[in-house]
Image 1: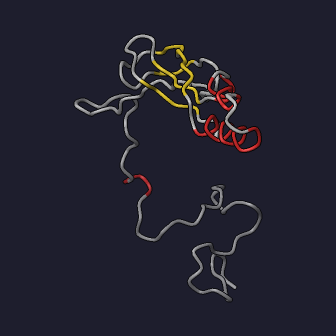
Image 2: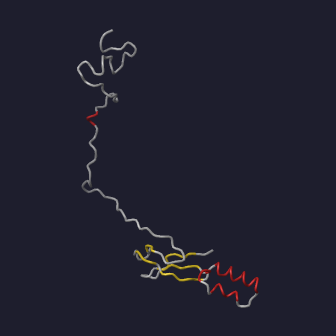
Image 3: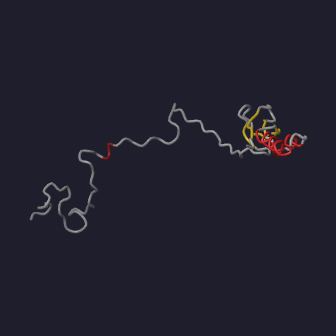
Length: 141
């Protein structure tokens, strides 16, 4: 058999050889796509901002805690300031349910008005201290 040819695969791009290198001492090349010259690939894009390119605007993340029945730190959506909310208790659905339950069992003796005096029965309204806009309402029920 002649050196550089293979009997099993006549169109083999890697001819038979002796040892780990071609006779000239070169390493075995990796397979490539036929007809594609690897030196003609386009160069990688330059680092940084190319002239005239519009970069996306990155905004800082604001971490807020969930607003519950105590004042909380949040970003006001109206004046765009980081604020500690002020709270105000308002009669809500739980207040009326407790009032109706007391009225059902004890009658209308005036005890049914107790839930309107207890803050833990009322909903909590969070306001911005800067612009006085309502930011959130924490509903008990």
